[in-house]
Image (tube, rainbow, N blue to C red; front, side):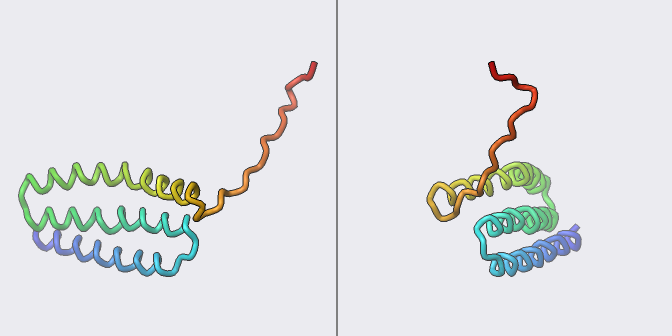
Length: 109
């Protein structure tokens, strides 16, 4: 189990480095927020699982399972909250919206 744990830990570290390079290369706020949520899922989840397998206790595995559920559920919502905050603070422009097309079935009386 320790070898599998070390493999998962190294996989998580490599993913963190790759996504950190991607974070440095992106220029727009929505892209940066997308990359940060990728870091959370692609790097943190295997690292946590690898650490729990390396430790080898049942309690560590249960804690990682609970934390992973919160991670997979919470990361997309957190990235959307960060994007909304950037829009409301004026750091990011609101994307243009198209008017809804008029329905052909409506009748004007």
